[in-house]
Length: 153
Length: 162
Image 1: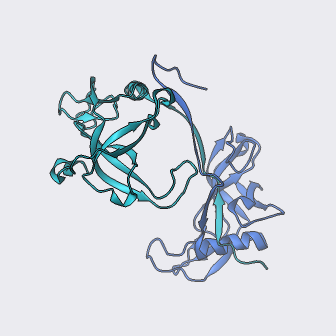
Image 2: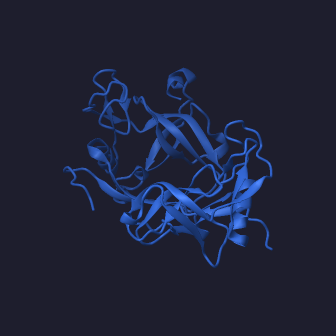
Image 3: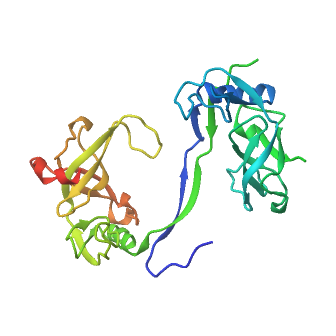
């Protein structure tokens, strides 16, 4: 669907693509998080010195810059949607191939929110404050796309 | 228990439609004719290439068209040693910012027809074009720049354009 174009103006379709996708290392904190997703279908957060639990876990406390260490704790699988946005026409790269919500989800036991997809079926099923629960794929590879969320009252 | 997860792979794919706008469209059509078109700002007098339609400093339209010569000076450059794309030339190859004579903005291009380790700031170059029938409305109409054989330009002539 193109916008009207003035005479003489060139319009071209471009594709920005990284063939094969972009592979990057995840580091020890995200590595532990994803390993737990893959092997145990369990979400983890890291507990800071002040007791707050960050999800996803990070290597350094964003407030103090201190190394976060090894205090990983289970969080979820339930949680609460803090904010959300409806994706009416999913792109090929989106986590779901039918309309869904991207949402910030405060998992039970966590002090920060995780951005993920909620398979709510329709936008009217979404509201801030609603409860959701993580669902895990049977076959997991250690990737954030191994899970998604569904409404759960 | 397998090895811990150490990497992830994510898709990077963006499809979009780009509207070149009037000035850039004129520039691209000029390339097909073997011309490099810039525009001069009526306030500050700077010549911008490629033609962009307005001056970023004075925020006025730049209607005066200026045809730049094919010759210029290499300001900064990069010798690429890693073949990161099938579309790139054989490594090592050189890309550079070329300040065409009379321009106040440098143009990005390949520098070829010389050993990669001989490229230097101040080197004088000239554009090498694709045959007219192979040119499209794209910067690739200029195949690359090659040494022109002139003595290197003095640093003072391009130090403001780095």
